[in-house]
Length: 381
Ligand SMILES: *Cc1c(COP(=O)(O)O)cnc(C)c1O
Image 1 (spheres, protein in one colour):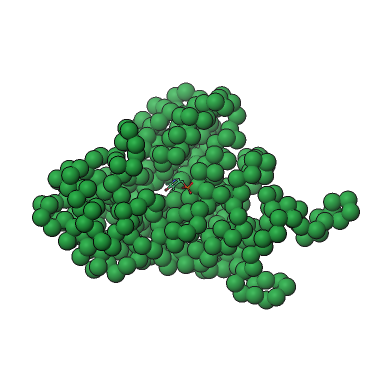
Image 2: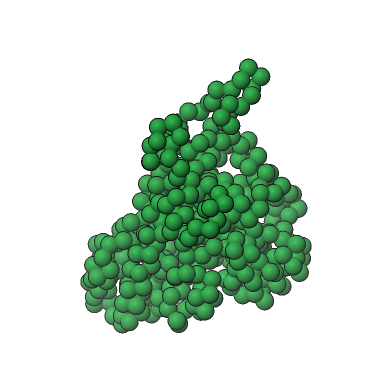
């Protein structure tokens, strides 16, 4: 681990948690499916493991890798991003008040409105890109602030270092959902956050074939112990095969992010110049309200963007229907490009504008991606 802390991110992505198998010399890691591990007659641990739900070697490798990539003291892997979020927020004591972004991931919104109040944890929703609003919301006692930057689907950017200062000045923790950026582009712990959360389903997995989540902690302290104990007892753990797929995803994460971002840049500038387009939401565009903050706290601007069409809902649905390389599907971060009319998937009270399509830019050739949008927008201007 000492050597790993001095390595650059690309090197960590390949080598963290990647020691060759001690028994066989295998370079690719083994998948340990065993649910139980031999112990001594008085339950003495022989190799450090007892039962899969408590901890297992494949998961350990993944947690080592994710903690190293985020520059954290320790990580916990979960069965999904939502299991990770719940694992953290359900550890807060009754009476805790938390601040969530007004445009937070929909699953977190449901958790905070339907379930957390049953435990006595109450959320207030704030625009996290508006520091004055965040400070005002901290006038009442607060236990935790949640940031999600860039956010979904308007790609709003919040200032992680400033939020950490506000949180700590009020004795609160800052947790940051780093799913869209990944540690390749943004490392919230180095900016002062206390906990980072990932839906590893997205870029870590990278191939739209594994569900997972993770929490990364700045310190291996009492909070970490409490959250780990909760995971052990409530059981939302990751399956070893999923941990193995996510480890494989880690190895190419930095390389994929570079190409995702380069493709997004090409597509965003094409869309921004198209007469059928009213607005492109991508923090890499100088016109984006979060561009300056993103330029400071991110290494590149990511590959999630959204586009708002002059022709409104009708034009958005028409374009989504004509795209051929961009599959209409939810989720993000895979090799293949995806598009989604968010308002249509948000149910009865959509928060996304009706004219908006969200795009996960994949790893195809950028000219092919641009050509697909050109034909889909043709005649909509
Ligand atoms: C997908 C997602 C989640 C939830 O993760 P799951 O793996 O689907 O449970 C949370 N936050 C963000 C930003 C996401 O994109």
